[in-house]
Length: 197
Image 1 (cartoon, rainbow, N blue to C red):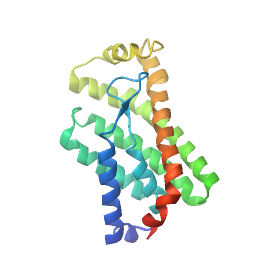
Image 2: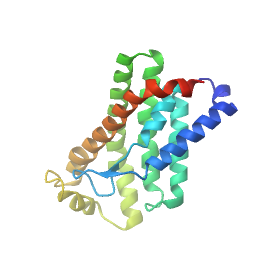
Image 3: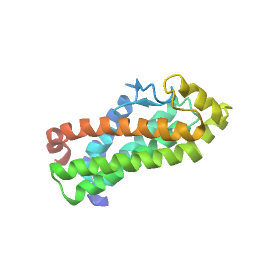
Image 4: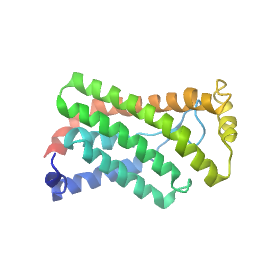
């Protein structure tokens, strides 16, 4: 989708609806014992993926941005969580939608979603290790070992900051991305006629 089409009234309305749905889905969360308690799985990436598949990568990234800007009104992480969610979610959607745009069929949809999950996991692990957790720790006055300790109850494999990233953050993102991918895969063909009108 070119920029003129993205900023047409029709597209703005669709992006607004997808962003609102994505924002609401952020409130329906499921904790995963292998991860720190503040990291939870939700389906908020699904509307962005649907928008990205139907309208192109930029549409999906805009949905991610709006969702996180809306969430700033109730942030408990001084904006750090929202920044992380945007970086990770935008990576996921941008990669998946870019790959899918080249060949729009079921097989390529699977390839696109798998590559999106892998890209998201790499970016999430690196950004959490070097930017997000240190910034969150500073905002909440916690040292890095506090994150290790809060994870150890549900994940006995975590014994250091390195293992926290490798054996908690990375698997968490694989799980979260896989769940969103499955839902997107089964929903897209049903809703794509509405998104493409």
